[in-house]
Image (cartoon, rainbow, N blue to C red):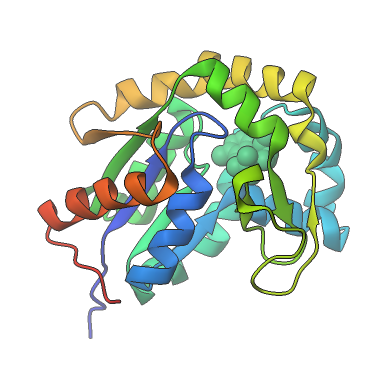
Length: 220
Ligand code: AMP
């Protein structure tokens, strides 16, 4: 029996544009599988695996992990995820090469399933947003100062991520501009832009409208 594969949504946008918040919205309202390479890498680091030891310093400094390692963890985890339902890729692909590898994955079968949403936001707003955000140490959910929380809805403690210090944020933005912007160009035929400047609810509504136009409806 051939398995039905569902859509893959790629969320593009600078660090802090709101990809994590939108991914959480999609998880809550659409029953998607949230596939974050950042979370997968942090998990490898936490478990002290070979990959974790190799990437620890790179992730802490805001650099990009090598395409070979990222492709390895994506191949290992993505095939099962796409067989289960709607998948949201968060933080991947981050280079044009990663996008090419993804298009070629599973003998090119994934390519037709890919929809790309780019969340665009002003650069200085990003720096201020990222330097103030807190992340759940348990589930990776993110919160801004307006949320006024010290504990996540899952019960995990909120911490400041090491790579959210301002100097590291600037380094991550520089890397994003150099290496990830070309990914938007690569997807120009499949990419739709949503403004990330509004409140999270407003941005989420715009994403809902867009997904509706792709024929993807909310479950809740
Ligand atoms: P994120 O949680 O998506 O901001 O990712 C945190 C860090 O993990 C990044 O700053 C990179 O060091 C690394 N990382 C995550 N995804 C990728 C990727 N697709 N390619 C290279 N490095 C990545």
